[in-house]
Image (cartoon, rainbow, N blue to C red; front, side, top):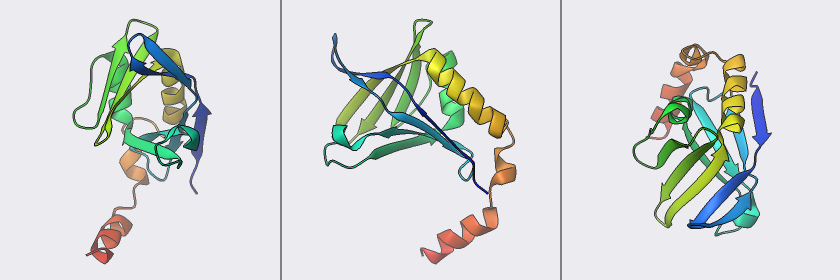
Amino acid sequence: MSKVITRIVQAQLITRPPATRPLTPALRYDTDDPLAVRIVFPSEISLDGEEVAWAFSRELLAEGLRGPAGEGDVHICPCGQERTVIELYAGEGVAVLEFRAADLGRFLQHSYDLVPAGAETALLDLEEGFAALLRGV
């Protein structure tokens, strides 16, 4: 049975420094996908009016709280001791978001309370995953 953690947090969308826009995205962790975390943005801020979720590895979030991390679509780095910046790269451009590091750290710790670091693969149903991939062929 899946367990899900969802936390609404405060963030700032950095539009053009120093301009910002406050946001309240949700952070989500689901034991059915134990390697990933998600940032879920409310529909009112998306370009098409739909809720938007960005998924990336839980390990990336942990690394990004300690120092610059990420390649590809998601980059995370500390901004001083109290803030963390997450950059999301898409075809439409880049979203730069600033979060309180403590909020991200608490969320990450709650996810570790459900599934300790390194124990994620024990929850994965690899046979079902392979079967789903083969069905898609």
